[in-house]
Image 1 (tube, rainbow, N blue to C red):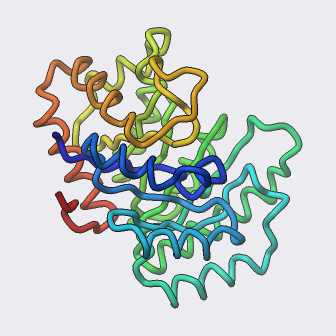
Image 2 (image 1 turned 45 degrees about the vertical axis):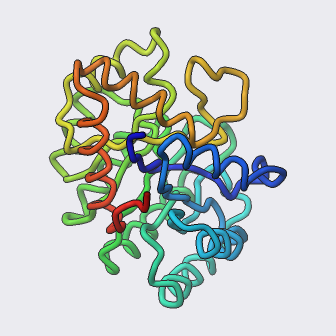
Length: 260
């Protein structure tokens, strides 16, 4: 069993309410011994905190996701600051970002909330977990204006040039189920050649299942399938690759070694 860290899993989602313990057990049996679980709105922070306290190996990140814009209030930014004061074990700010794909989301308001969360993370020397769908260039510009900020762009789907710009800023990219699809040629080519020190693996459970899991609720146990695909693309030993990627996650999020 190869110890792994799922760098982006929504294990607190309603989709897991009926069998969360079993999902966790399957993940641990597969070697996924730790997970970073990012909240998407202020209403979810308390439940996520309870979950991560109750379950070893789960690490909370708190933020305001752009897709849930209607749920956010301006005062939630102050609430995030207060939350981080009270819960210093929170490992990142996020999931936050920009989404120019979903219609009807106010772009100006997205920008304001995103940049405010970046500033919070920078003041507190916390990494950020960034969602950037059809908005990567604008997200990059916001990150450039904040030198020294660390983080990951999760579910990366951009170009090699955009990836290099992120690496130049010290940002990592999160790779999940989409890399297993043969049609994802640009992503697969990037993952095959990129520097391993900027690579994280994720499932984005319950979303974005791998090609062998299409149409089913995604789970953290599927991280093993993603690792196998990435190792094959790179021509590397899965165990050695897993060790390097796990070290990346531990360093970015200041995580302890995953317990066996």
